[in-house]
Length: 260
Ligand SMILES: Nc1ncnc2c1ncn2[C@@H]1O[C@H](COP(=O)(O)OP(=O)(O)OP(=O)(O)O)[C@@H](O)[C@H]1O
Ligand SMILES: [Mg+2]
Image 1 (cartoon, rainbow, N blue to C red):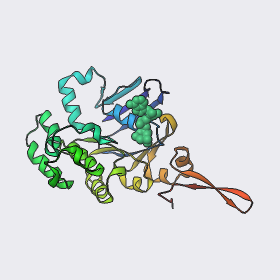
Image 2 (cartoon, helix red, strand yellow; image 1 turned 30 degrees about the vertical axis):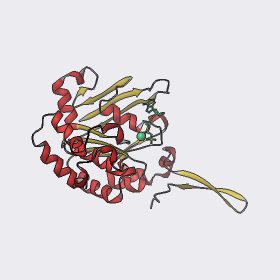
Image 3 (cartoon, helix red, strand yellow; image 1 turned 90 degrees about the vertical axis):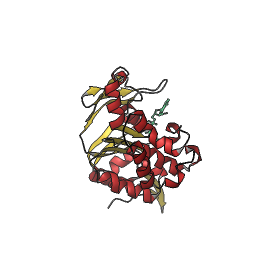
């Protein structure tokens, strides 16, 4: 479904990211993306969503390379935008319609999908936004904005969803709903998070990135979450130094999670 092939990217005046990153995601996989602040998780998700393009290497969607040219092909672009969706870490950037109702209906209308209105009511209800449909999106709370952004994705019934730190803004009940709804579905998921206690529930495969987006681990999620050395190298565990008597003593702490 998705292939990342020797990917490299650099923001202007910034050090290069990813160092020939390669991996593939097959339909139905639930992948959790872990890594320290600034390692390039959000950048990677934007590359995968065709919002920015690689400096070196390729991102391929269903065998076709993502580029400004390929996305100018209307038919490919329509199919791609319907199927490959991204929930932004800070969704404010993607909300611009006058009301919550228009916001959720925007994607289906753009893509000419039938039943846009039924979809709006259904997903607003699922996400607890039925009473907010008349409000301007900027009037919502941070978590409600995230729910709205999620509704905008779900109304398209996409095959692939990249979710950038969805657990940071959502309340536990909504995260629980997300896990129950999405993990049980046949959707392909790529979810970035720092939250190790939730990570175990968010997928079955882990991609762990180190500084500047090098890939430290690609494999089953459960063993990665028990590997303190790996988590430490990925900036997800911290080595505290406590004084015990006369000597320093280091412990690894993951703060929100204690491996068995
Ligand atoms: N729009 C941008 N313009 C310039 N540099 C950027 C931009 N977005 C990100 N960067 C840089 O790219 C690097 C990777 O940032 P990115 O947001 O992808 O990291 P991240 O892994 O998502 O971090 P976090 O865990 O804090 O969300 C950082 O050094 C950041 O400063
Ligand atoms: Mg990020």
